[in-house]
Amino acid sequence: MKKEQDISELERKFQEKIDQDIKIEPKDWMPDNYRKTLIRQISQHAHSEVVGMLPEGNWITRAPNLRRKAVLLAKVQDEAGHGLYLYSATETLGADREDCIDDLHSGKAKYSSIFNYPTLTWADMGAVGWLVDGAAIMNQVPLCRCSYGPYARAMVKVCKEESFHQRQGYEIMMALAAGSVEQKEMAQDALNRFWWPSLMMFGPPDEDSKHTKQSMDWRIKRHSNDELRQMMVDITVPQAEAIGLTIPDADLKWNEEKGGYDYGEIDWDEFWNVVKGNGPCNKDRIDTRRKAKENGAWVREAANAHAEKRKARKLRRAS
Amino acid sequence: MHTRKKEKRENLEEHHKKYIMANKEWPLWEVFIRSKQGLSHKHVGSLRASDEVMAIENARDVYTRRSEGISIWVIESSNVFASSPDNADSLYDPANSKVYRHPTFYDVPDGIEHM
Ligand SMILES: [Fe+2]
Ligand SMILES: [Fe+2]
Image 1 (cartoon, protein in one colour):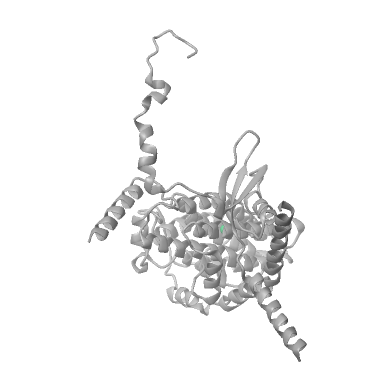
Image 2 (image 1 turned 90 degrees about the horizontal axis):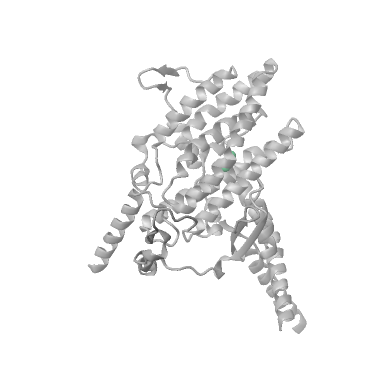
């Protein structure tokens, strides 16, 4: 009985801190569910950064010139860094990095479904940077004020780095859209394929989103999925118009009253189908990650052996 | 016969050791960066590395890709000891009652300068 009282008292104090926008730090008391929710969300976020390198890594060797290649390489390297900052944040919650990674490989953990679509042409590098990184930024900016300190700090660093990601993508689209007829078609085709999956990146509609309310109360989340999606549509439409591309949505219409665009129905069956593992590249992505871990076994082995040898040498010298 | 058995056992041991070495998780390191001359090192995050040399190399790649630092410290996380947040009140409260540690506690007449 006493114990229960203690916990409800701790929970009350915890919520009070959150309501006053005082950050929660790793060693502070937190409800089990807050910890679990964060581990699930942050590791999922980390996996998305890591798996997200694959569709773009696919084009590094085929970038059209040295400038584009250097840029793409730097962007993909940033994404690896983002994955690391995030795994680092999960470890402050008592999660184990390698366990998290194994959960990804076994299919127990999810990652953003957008990366289960293939990148078929060079224009897809433009669409991914512009739309996918654009949507990621939209999601990540409010996370800089998330109640959990290490996650918020990681997001500040990530957001600083993301801004060039989106710009380089838009620049690719702009160049193609201003190019030959074939190049413009290629850009339009990439936009057609990535538009809807990008809007799905914000997650299911609010009425079907089971985690939103609690996450909002805990200030892990600041805006609902639909709010973020609306913001994405409103800022992206003029960007497309500016370079002469057309958003592939016949129902898209400016709504004066709400001061935003109305947009067409999203195919949520497609979304759930890809989440469940039936997207065009789900299997390929996980196989690639799993193989990377297996093929890296000898490196981990050698590094461990080397570290032990050095330690032994040091000890011998000290004695 | 005897030597073959021994050989087999040695092979097994070798195999076992290899398995352990490939699966032993690299330790966790906390990373501190001095962003420029004149400032102290500040904690930026953590990473996994097999030893301090690799930890510094990785820290450079992970945390200083945009010239965020000119000096890196790494400390194995298991060597960091922290105060407990549960004792925060009793640990830091006494400071609140000692306002005389702050210069604003003292009266200085108007017209007195450089103090
Ligand atoms: Fe990223
Ligand atoms: Fe990015």
